[in-house]
Length: 281
Image (cartoon, rainbow, N blue to C red):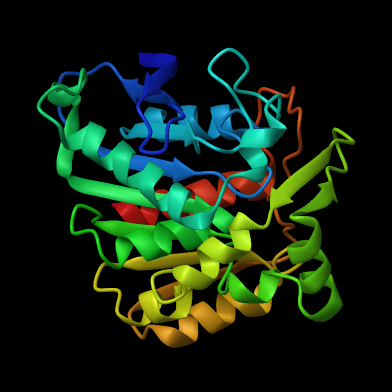
């Protein structure tokens, strides 16, 4: 039997809460932990992520997914982006701090489910932009036993504008990106770029991957047009102990979309989960 608890509220370090879900089998044995980090313009309830959690739980894992505290969601509305001001004030170091808070929660003596978890067996999975956060954390946090990136990014710096676009952003103080699904004009305040520059060494994904000492699995679709498959090959080249799996024909979200109303996972996502579970075991 699977137990689920949704929308657990955790304190964030920057004045906004982290909203998290847990999904795990109710057996009394302790279970390996999987912590999932969503990507850019993402959230824990996007698409098929709930079914992904159930799939891991059905295979004996304690699965945790959460919303980054500044992802644009709220406690009352954790789906989509009711708080665009928060979204605009997000940055990479806040997301790293959020993952740190989730890890603190899991290993704490006050953790509600402590009898269910193996705190010395924690895998962190990051999708897309969340893959970078997961990699940066795994390189420095000894609580992380394994790292898995799904369509993960290899470089944050190259995702910022340059030249006139960067100058305009600094001048205006805000840059807008349209969400193709919700049609919202989603703001990025210039603090995002300043925060990156001030923390450039800490946010160097390539440097982190080079010094990774934990097992690392890289999964990427060769039809990904959002984060191209060459980024996966680059990450793999940086660490001789990494494992690379290229999924032929798979897109950035491995066949899923939002909303996902089917009770079956897409075929490519099933493959991703199976490869990840084999790696974790």
